[in-house]
Length: 387
Image (cartoon, rainbow, N blue to C red; front, side, top):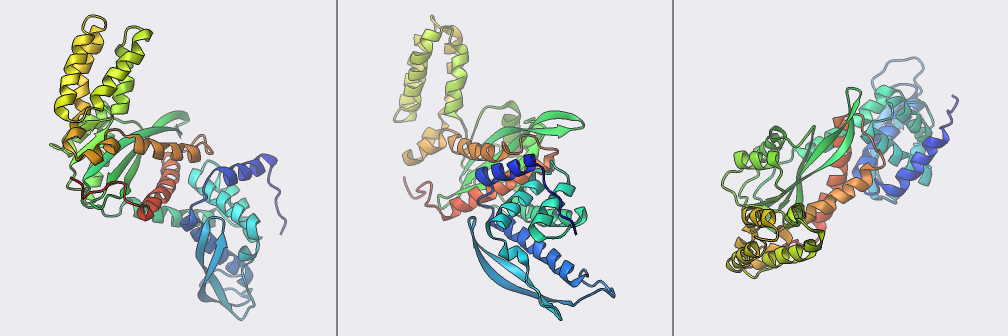
């Protein structure tokens, strides 16, 4: 059968993806390896599983595990066995080229921006024979099932909850819109970080945040002592509805940024920022409240709007003083989640534009699984036994 030659632009995409992402997606790589080898066995046998045909050249005979070393780490694949035919999948013998093709195939399935026909062409390059769109879709479904299982896994006691959102461009009905990726990170009772959940919505409206937070509680999220987030109106309303009575820490970093909108002169910004920081860096809440009162008085004449805003808003960033001293610095902002967002951006910039919500959710879920697994093996983020 004649091979198709991929366009230069497609080769460039292979190179880009090989350099900038999907390096840790061992599980997804394993799934695709297994699917590719099964397809290759069917090609060798001239028959799909359970198919009756006069052209059959042998029979499927189960699988044998094999450990393979790749740049994404050590993976264990299920090598298809045959009876009545000498067969060994060439997929396992194509070295780095196969690995790069696998990465791209996984990437294509995540972004879904190119047609399944193009994904089939890549799998043909990997396996050495043509693969139908239906077969490619089945491989993508295997990946989706694993990602869905992770997103729906049970949760438990989570003392600290950090919430944030980022935006990605998605095509909807012929138009390109900015879709919100809602993220939740938790600190577990043993002090470890964990990605609790992710959701893709058309906006950060209350209905979307409420649905997302409700899904977390339905999965078993409980015993939350503090929620840290920005002051988005939709999130604020949803948090009060789903997690009533739980103390809220408004992100101090965002408070600092918001304050600058109320400074009337550029020359005052540096001093105003320093004054606000001194409030946040106070040794205890009583000292912070005393400094806040002094600062508000200081700016009543030179920046009255700033003084009024500070008096109303800054106290929302002081809830962290009720926590143990050793916990405050890491829970007074959403910066920890901001770093997760940067990693997501590094991966999603390859796709640039997603054709639908599902493709965006597929990619961010895969990246977040990597992050969460790394956190599981890392040392504790907080010492939960501290006073």
